[in-house]
Image 1 (cartoon, rainbow, N blue to C red):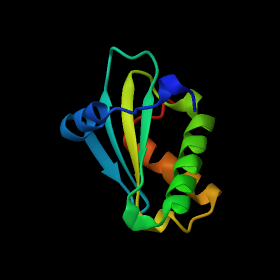
Image 2: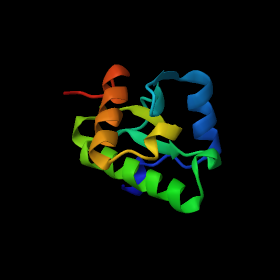
Image 3: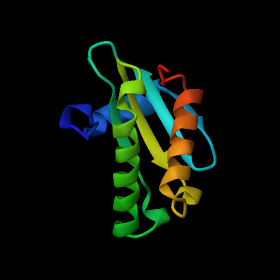
Length: 113
């Protein structure tokens, strides 16, 4: 995922958590907030230590970022969002996880098509 499409600062995460909206299913939670000053969408990923060791957490981050990268043309502009993985997401295949990501983004009305 390109550097300009990533959320990295704690202030950005806190701004979205406090002032944004959320939607969840059993595998993922998405928090989002409209941000007119950014041209594209920006995404952050959060995976708790409760879900596993560093290998498990980093793999989950990589898979989620890749799913979003492949769907980038469908995601609306001027929005910041955070994907939070829940425990059932750890054991899922990539295709099922992709369906789950698309589900939460569709319910949050972040997909344009």
